[in-house]
Image 1 (cartoon, one colour):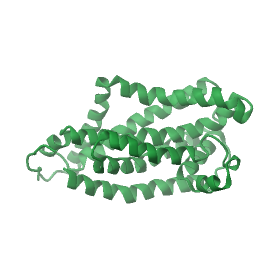
Image 2 (tube, helix red, strand yellow; image 1 turned 180 degrees about the horizontal axis):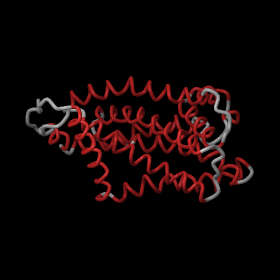
Image 3 (cartoon, one colour; image 1 turned 90 degrees about the horizontal axis):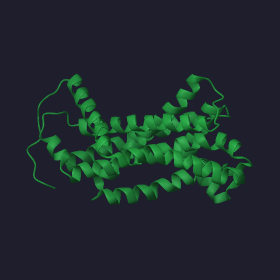
Image 4 (tube, helix red, strand yellow; image 1 turned 135 degrees about the vertical axis):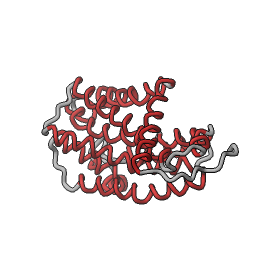
Length: 265
């Protein structure tokens, strides 16, 4: 890492720190203009998943693509949250490797602003992706059978879960030596928790050992909760489990990520 100036020690008012977080969140969003490939990726990739799973596998799994769309779209919304947010660590690692964080550290800004600003920027992008995903699903036949408040609660639940995952991803990004390592490690972590869940199929169709994993998988709780809040299927305790996992991930990984960030920069 390149040598850097001494860290700023200015005492900042809380509102000033908040402004710094918003400024860096905006920076992360503006970067998309110079990287249209990334913009297309987080918008187009979820739509490709819908078309692929609904029209290629839907008939074989559920009899018709239409009935499978009602089942799988809420699951894909939950899965999209995992995929989108786990990219946070790669971007963070890239900023550190390129010296961006060294430059920020030399400025009189809140020490937490780079991490919080990146999280806020990622959540805005993620929220836009969820709305596009739901709108596209409705365009091809998905129907929401609950009221607008329940539907909004489903999307907010995915965002809350995304906050917890963002801290996991940032910790990986801070500990890894390169963005490529972050992507590889994130892939190893993401696939068991997304495909080993009830996102695509009912857990009752899985072998026993896989059912045991899928039934305790936090993505299964999230998928069940979003499905219930959008289509009216039974919720059970899935909402509370999803909220619990969101709080637990944040409580455990946010302090670890902040500690790693302080050592790193």
